Image 1 (cartoon, helix red, strand yellow):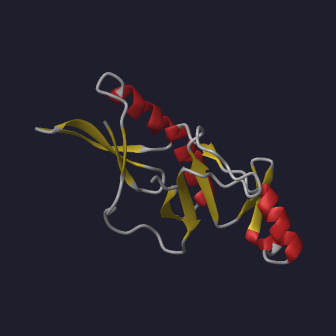
Image 2: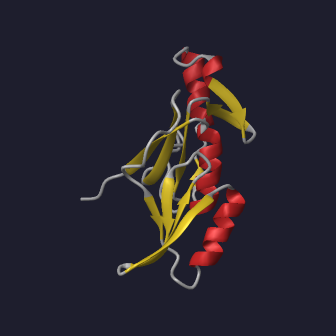
Image 3: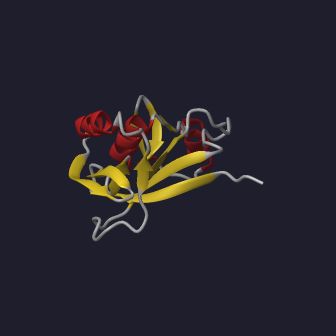
Length: 149
């Protein structure tokens, strides 16, 4: 049996985070505008809980990216597979991540990929070379650690 899943990441600016991670991973930003319109119509969501982003309505405090090959619930725009959801939280990141993403591109593409990600807003923390291999430790625009291998 397989399951749909999502990784939930706290964020100061969820929209900027999905733009970064969508571009970094080749994932698509979910379009929940039809769901939002329905929820606004029922009074379940207030207009103040939404923003205009990417030419459509989006939730103000949460948004996800999804793998482009995975199916989508046409009623909600929610991905039915591999997703990363960013939710706004009031506090800034403090401390090391307990979970992080490894981006696997292969040794021949590692440095170029790290450079591309820097162009998107990531920061190189350090190159790591250990018995287990070599990778680049990086942070996304909000300081979340990830590795490029």
